[in-house]
Length: 95
Image (cartoon, rainbow, N blue to C red; front, side, top):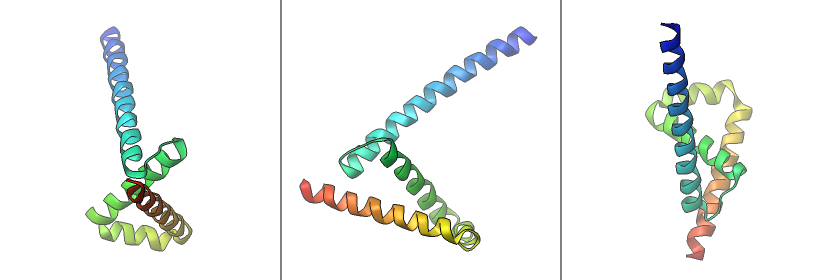
């Protein structure tokens, strides 16, 4: 039984690693299409923007609570949103 669990766990880890790599590729392409360029810092900002935006739209009370609890983080996410907006506008104007 332990061997079976070890094999299953190892197989699952490989699947999770593959999924993570594929999601990273998706994020990289999305960042490139959205902003016209990509790097690790931009990908992280886009990931944070995606997460916050989704939560704010799907569970506004949770986002409101988080904003009230962490005003400094709220300011940080506002800056990220503004930065992404500016980069996106600049990218669209180039096209």
